Every structure is written in structure tokens, then in C-alpha cells.
Image 1 (cartoon, one colour):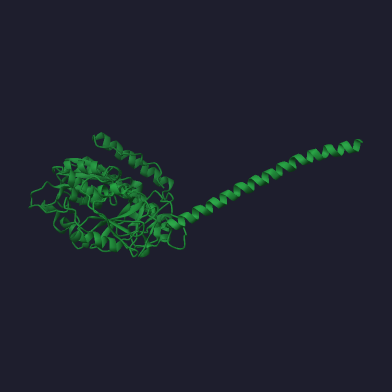
Image 2 (cartoon, rainbow, N blue to C red):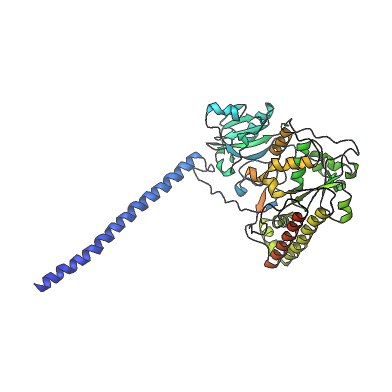
Length: 448
């Protein structure tokens, strides 16, 4: 009897964990099956809506590292999610801007995209859409859903220029699937080669008719981009202290007509300079000083030297030569800033990061400093013609014609960091001393 009872009691203790185990296995199977089914459904759904055109395969878009550009010579369509088209000539039919939202309904299409849908084709390409919009003398072309082409003008602030992440435009072009022509709810926006008459006229002034103003900066601080903004925003060309060299370049003949003449003729609104000796600074009647985070500017300057592969780009930041270069350039960045702040007769300080973030407002301040009447439409046009890369969501190399590479690790040794941080503090305290605009952020914070 005792043995019987003992047996039954033991069996109950065995049954309880066994039942719990079975129940747990069932739950795992149900949840796991549902999760696998959901993933399969999502992949199938995305594959039918776009992908990269290879039987529903969904490409993995790389995360964009927050840092510094390296201009390469050739465009690679698939590199860094660049599924848009670009060109290597100055007379290109268009320049890629960004991915933008598609109007939600028919009623709002013509309010946003002035000419509306102009062409739909099973053989749609970016070139075909640009050609169509150019023939209509319209300044923007927008492609959507792989086969649709919209054309538009922009005469004021427009939601059409609400730039978004390019990966959202994931629909392959029906006539050229290696490129993307918008998405189901987004459009790939291109600026056509049709001039925008609000700010396309830029003319040299008579000799000795303008004040002698410098546009000074450490190299790779946005001087070229700022020159483009100023020229479009004022209608007057900019010059360069390097005019003898610049006049031999195609960029002077096609973009900077003021770069073809002696900068001392006083025919240009301001003159580009990277020089900082006292005699040079004091020969100008005033200066716009463009300052950029030295961590960004120094790396960008290093990257501009010579053609290199991606691996070579990374390796050069692991050498003693890089450490020496960084220390030398830190001193040059600091000297450049302090010399122009201390010795300029008049000065306006523009911070590159502010220009990126608030382009219209900062350009307006520069135009006012240059004693040119502010034309709001010209300023707006200038910004729309030369948008900051933060607005477009991409980093466009050399006026949209080259691709970029990125560093994702901090290349600065500890001793170099201390040197740069000390230089930042010295320059910032000097800005404050002269009642000038201090740095817009803590530049010592790591951005790699």
C-alpha cells in the first residue's frame, strides 16, 4: 500500500513539469511560425513594390556615417546608395537634388508640381524625363513610380523642395532599372539645365567701382559653395587671389567669371583667399570670414590630395605623416582665424555649420554686409540653385558631379585632439572679445 501511494505521488510531481514543458514548446512554435511568416510576407511585399529590380530582392541601404567627404573622380551608380544619375560635364542636362514627397492627390498636384504629369512610359529613363521638361522650359523634373515624369517651375518657397532621404525613392526606372525613378509615394527630383531667371544674371561691374572685400577661409571650409551663393544672391561675380591659376580652369569659364580677371581691379563683390599674413589681410577694406569645424576641415583637406582608392584613403590616417599633417594644419587653421579677426578693418564672421543649417538667413546677412540691397527672390533662388548637402540628404561632390566616401572612425590621436581643442577655445574666445558670432556648437565633441 505504501509503495502504491509513493508511486502515485512521484508521478504527479513528474507530470507537472512535463506539461509545462509541452506548453512552452507549443508557444515557441506558434510565435516563431508567426514571426517567420511575417518576415516572408514583408520581404515579398517590398520586393513587389521596388527593390533593385532583381526578382523582388530588397537591397540593404547603408546607414549614412555622419562625417567627412572624399571626392572620387568617377561616379559609381550603386556606391553608397547612389541610384540616381549624375554627369561629369558642365553642360549636363540636369543635377540630382533629392527624393521628395509625391503629392497625395490630384487636387494638390498642380499646386506643387506646376506642369503636373507630362509623360508616362514603360521605357521611362531619367534622361527622357529631363529632355521632356527641358523642352517645356521648366526648371525641375521629377520621376515617380518607375514610369512617370512630372515637370515644374519653382518661383517661391515650395514643398516640392522638401528634400528627404534618397533611399525612399526605390522604384527602378522602367527603361533603365539600374537607376531609380522615385517611389510609390516619392519622386526623384532633378534640377534641369533651364536657367532660373530670378538669379541667372551675374555681371561684372566697372573697374574700381566696388569695395575691396575678402572672402577668407581655411581651405575646405565651403568657400566655393559660398561664392556660388553670393553670386546668385547679389548678381555680381566673385573674384580670387588665385585668379592666374583659376583662369586656366574650366570652373572659371563656366561658373566663376570673376576668376578670369585680376582680383585688384575691384570689379567683383568679394575675393576668395586662404592667405593670412598681416600685410595681405590689411590690404582689404573688409572681409567675410568663413569658419568651419577644424576636425571636419582638416580631414577634408587631407582627402583632397591626390587620387586614392577607398583602402588607401583609410590607411593614410594610420600613418605618422597624418599626425604631422594634422598638427601643422591645426596651427594654420588657428592662424587663419586669428589673423583675419584681429587685423580686418571690417569683418563679418559666417560659420559653415550655420550656413548649412540656415542658408537663407545666413546668406542674407552676408549680402547685407556687402552693402547690396537684399532681393528676397534672388536669395531664395540662390539657395534653391545651390542647396546645402544637409538639405538634400546627400553629400554632393564638386557641384553634383562626383561621389563621396566617408570616414567612420576617429582619425585623431589624443595629443592632436588636445591641440585642436585648445585652438578652438583660443579662436572662440577671440570671437567673443571682438563681439563677433561665436562657434554655433561645441566643436570638441567627437563627430566620428
